[in-house]
Amino acid sequence: MQRHRKLTLASSAAAWALLCGFAAIVPAAGQGAPGELAPTAERKLVPPRAGAAGANEQRIAAIVNDEVVSYFDLDQRMKLVISSSGYMPSEVELRQLETQVLRNLIDEKLKLQETKRVEVGFENQEIVEQLQQIAQRSGTTVPEIQADLERRGISIYTLTDQIKADLVWNRLVQGRYGREVKIDEQMINMIQDEARASAGKPQYDVVEIFLPIDNPNDAAKVEQQAKSLLEQLKKGTPFPQIAQQFSQAPSAATGGQLGWVVQGQLAPELDNWLKNAHRGALSMEPIRTIGGYYIMGVRDTRNVASGPSSPKTPLFLKRLLVRLPASASTARAAQAYNQLKEAATRVKGCNTLADIAKSIPGAEIIDVGTKPFTALDQRDQARIMGLVSGQASPPADRTNDGYDSIVLCGHAEEQAQGVPNRDEIMDREFDRQMSMYARRYLRDLRRDAVIDNRLGED
Image (cartoon, rainbow, N blue to C red; front, side, top):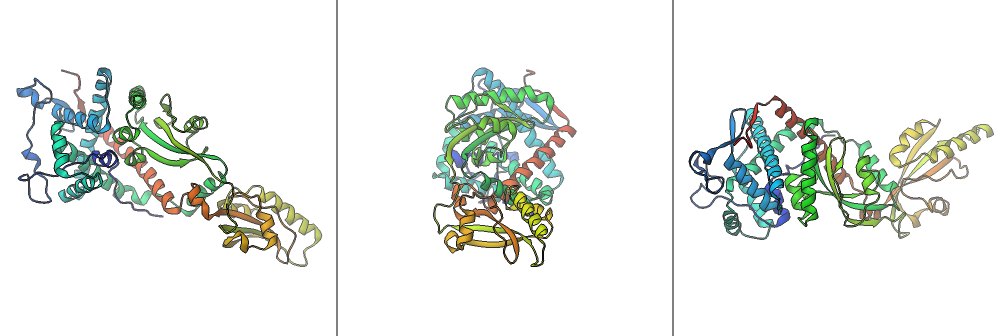
């Protein structure tokens, strides 16, 4: 199944602004025609640090395939990150942050070079529209935000360059890999059934920050960065702001909000932490997984009811039927009953029914549809009493058709109880797979690039 999503500026300051209420800016009068950004060539560099002058204004921090990242670029991005995230680093943390920010700038150079190479279409008006939307949603005016940025000493191009890099890179990755994303009905059913099977178990509203380890040699550096971010969270820096600027998970676009999960849905290392978590919990140390380091938090917890609270709640039902002709022998009938009885204990959701039915001669699946409890006959009401979503009843007495087991696939209240609908599942899975493709693509670009990192040489 092919899926296309509207592009999300997951790591840009624009997306962060939606969370913080801090808007971006559009060109001031005289900087270009309406709907246009002032040309890059008209930028004027300013000293990167107090006291710097002359040639130091354009000192080189890194060279990426013959393109320069200047210390001015680095200084501007540092100001933006610190201002937008509320991050208050110590002197040691500042050096670590500088290393990470330069890496991000290098990555942006690689992204822009690649999108230019493959001629990804782009219009300045798209940036303008993004900025105007941010200003509207943040409840302030563009002039007010522009004045605030200027007071912070941040060039507008520091922000618009980041937005542009996100915009064209996301468009490139989605265009290149969108057809590779696989989201089939079986996956959707499996995820829903897993959620239904968790009825009665506590759920956790989880937030996350993910820092990938693309090169095993960088593991120690990534761990140190994760510890530094964790210290800022412990000092009171809001989680969404840190996640927005630093997390590499798809959830970065929403401030790290992963949503409601139950135990068993996350990687084993994360699940092990979650089982002892409580409302307001924050992981005391970064959690190492096969892909990188996580910082986890729990915003809230809740318990899910194990069944419908009202007899009028619509139920989603199916039957697993083993047909028997009237002439079937007693031995054959006993065999069918025992096979169905054993199979019913293996049902872990309606997505498992097809495979289970194949293991029983003469078995078939009948979709009963959606019915409230009160619409069922007394026989079926008695059979589903005590079932939770995803469970099957033992076989009932033989009917003219044979033996059957009734399966409670779910109920309408589940949406309020954390069972995601199809669109939610498809969106989340699309984002997850596209994030994986994007990281892999960028890793390959880093591997093939010629990068001269000069940070700290002078």
